[in-house]
Every structure is written in C-alpha cells, then in structure tokens.
Image (cartoon, rainbow, N blue to C red; front, side, top):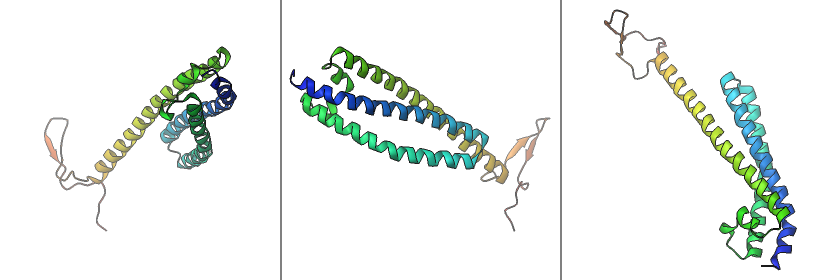
Length: 173
C-alpha cells in the first residue's frame, strides 16, 4: 500500500478540482430551486422558460465533470485494489497524509451538507408544485363543474341548495 500513496496523491489534486465543481453545481442547483419557486409564485412563464434553458445548458456542461469523477473513481479503486463501488472519499482519506486528508475531508463535509440541503429544497419545491397542481385542478373543477353535477351546498341558514343546473361556464356552443 505504501507504493500506491504517491500515485494516489498525484490524482488528489485533480479530484479536488472535480469536487470543487461538484460543490459549485450543487450550490447552483439550490439557487435554481429557490428561483424556480419564486417564479412559480409570481407566475412568470417567460422567466421560467429562461431558467429552464439555463438549467439544461448547465446540466449538459456538468455531465463532463460527472464523467471525470467516475473515471478518477475507477483509477483510484485500481490503485487501492478495491471494487469501484467501494471507492469512497472516506476510504481515500484513510490513505492520505494529513494535509490532503483535511482538504478531502473538508470537501466531503461540505458536499454532504449541501446535498442534504438540496434534498430538503427539492422536497419543498415538489410540495409547492404539487399544491399548485391541486389548486389548479380544484379551481378548474369548480369553474367547469366537472364531475359535480347535482352538487349540493348549504346556505347561511343551513338549508340545502342544489346546484344541478347552474354552471359557471357553459360547455355548449
């Protein structure tokens, strides 16, 4: 294992650059989710389209970084003599000297924090979009009375009022 250490340390700087790109990408994703929620609330379809175009462009560019990370993972797994699936930052830290171990550990901790935050923000965004879809469905159903033929509502005095023939929008031409 001692002879593998110089070979590993040569690749660590490359790996740190890839991890830095990962960190920037996760931060950008957090920003995009925040902006997406704001634009949905503001109902700005033009800005939403622009944001989605920006996300597509950045995602295509980021795929090169993912390929580089996977390639390094395979190379490091070969040097350490382990399976690619077992090659983790923690395993890498265990064979590095103190300075590089701290740098890898710092990035690992930051990536863990950011990905946890990204999961939370993704869930919040999904909930907002789900609520918007539900509100829109309820609104359309109420306006068009889809499936509500003969619905009954109650007046202020508690008496039942049938809504059978009164539709807000006539479907006839």
